[in-house]
Length: 531
Image 1 (cartoon, rainbow, N blue to C red):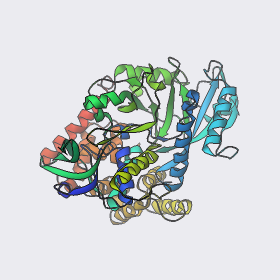
Image 2 (image 1 turned 180 degrees about the vertical axis):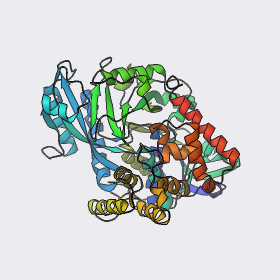
Image 3 (image 1 turned 135 degrees about the vertical axis):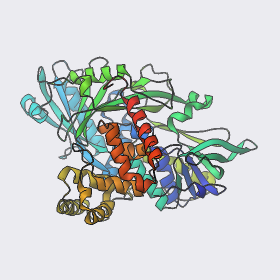
Image 4 (image 1 turned 45 degrees about the vertical axis):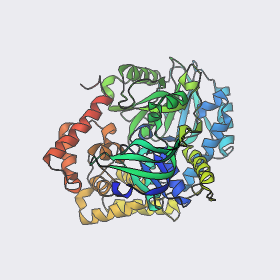
């Protein structure tokens, strides 16, 4: 994956996609597979906004059953089932526990009915992947971190998990392999119009400062929160903020779905890369869309909600890190943000630009297919959706279980520890064999970058060389999420920056600049903790 701004300037494309999050990536990939001449641009790094600030889940949304949004749940569950089959390295099963207490807002009978419906919509009713009930003792043994006072029992059910930033990156790689021109750090500065209709856009290279024009027969705006920079966009959208906290490991390999006692909202406790992810909040947002930060009230809310259920309470000093992102919802008169539908719609402005509004990571592929259907109809192109059921770009072609067993064995032979190997295979899929070859050359690359986290130096260097990294925080926040999973001080950042400096061509001044960018991101994430 190589970044080349010059491939854009002055060229005529069938489609220009603006925005390199999950929706833009799926649109570009689908359109390129259908044979369209596609360009996609992103003003920052791929997935640098909300698409790397999610709960890392591929799920149907159990809570939406309570609001009778059966259509959305069924749609998302169908996509979950397909992604588990087509991207087993990228999307993997994750079971959730739901405790039932004497004080629970939803009792065992209502919960059993909801889970039965969820299994039915997922096509797993009666299968071993469906929900299961446990008595008090068995549930407490399964989730020993829980406070057992008033615990009556609980259920488990199946959903799935992913690494959101790498999901987007893989789709961008797939689009590039299918002929799309994909350029990060490329800012849209305006549209080119004639007689009130758009025929292209002006761009600025954020690395060199160079400008250029891109000509396009169709343009899709999938810029998420930046849609609200115009009055039209603000009329279409409602922004809400979601915050997640990173805390020490507490769960093993299963997650928890819980209900906040203060307002009845559902939140999650999820194992992720060996730590615990807690989230999310859901509050209306009208602040600076360029700098979305975690506030003390967000931390207080999530800690209070989690501690209500835990045998040993967490304190702010336990927080490893945090992150915030903005959801773009369809405009609604609902008072509570959580009551607003997470479904998606396509809007088209008077000048012909199409805008993707709302949606979820889980169902983004199907929504993107609808966008490309619209584009093809307007372009006079007859080409059906090519992403449904298509094996992901980095998925091995052979039986995944057998391939995974072989790759795991090879990793162990090279001296990669079990947890690092497990995550390395998930992160890179079939490309992991290229990383194994670098370890054959230099065995020291099996060492972990941070002793407590499953990331090795071979991964760091390979990602730097091959995954369109421009800045240090691209590498440490989205290629591998070390910035949010660990407390990296200046010394640790310098050690990593110096390790990749030869590949990136950074001199001492560049290393200092990159470290400062990362330190600024860390400071915004935890404004009142670990000062």
